[in-house]
Image (tube, rainbow, N blue to C red):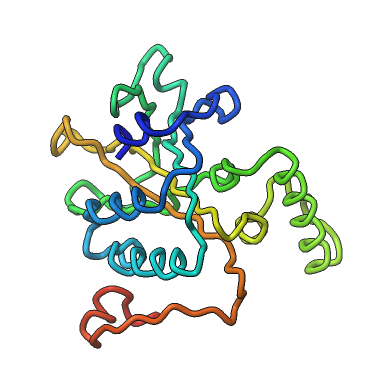
Length: 225
């Protein structure tokens, strides 16, 4: 995916993206292709590609999610530091992202608490829109609590998604440092992804229908849904 994007789309100035690799106005088909190729662990219930693809395609049919920002997150100090830990993706040196593993090495799953850093979800917003999102976050927080225990320094994810145009989606890609020795395959990186969807134009009244049997429902989403 990165190889194709880097050929077809111009990369944003990395000095403006905290040295991450960011491409804008990427066609939705490339995001769908990535999800088709990505094979998540069966227990990763919220990262199952078929449901994500159906949701994206349903919104594209309504004229939404047509333009995407794709961000390949890179920790620059892990590329340039004294003890570099990076992986080369499509010719790009990508500093590995460290996320603490919640399970021990005997568990074949690599479970973590949270993949996305607080600043990542706003990576596609202009400085002006980011400032507006922060002010709105402060206003909402103050209304909820009456006063700040601690004033927010970053816009909330909910506000970011509300302010992003309905035509624009965000795909975040992470190459993770694998806390195990040895690596299962040193030539195959451990890749995680996150998608930030904007609010729908029709708001909460809009729905996307899925038809699945009960077995698939419980396997994909568990008993919590």
